[in-house]
Image 1: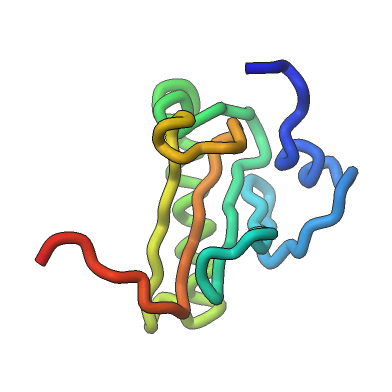
Image 2: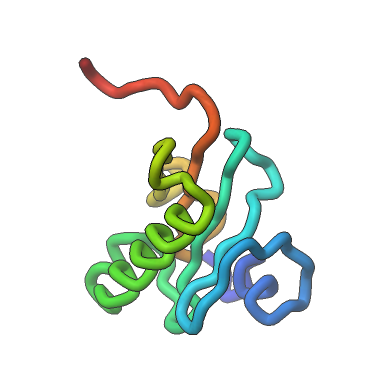
Length: 117
């Protein structure tokens, strides 16, 4: 993995544009540029960069909580808490991760299917 800045770091620094839909002191959320659902928002923590959820849990577990609190706040503000949504995070290339900066996908407003019965 290279030490090159990720697209998310460039968005945080406002070096490249993003359609930001939520921001507080610790978390930023913006629309995915290749949405997989009608609503597809990416949530990232703004403070210490971690490359995946395992690293975030080990190094900065409070950032997991702060990110999920931001997701819940956004869902409440937009009414998604009433209609439902899915949160997804990928880890590693085999897990579908393409940007190595911990992030969470909020997907909603579509038939997302169900796992199991």
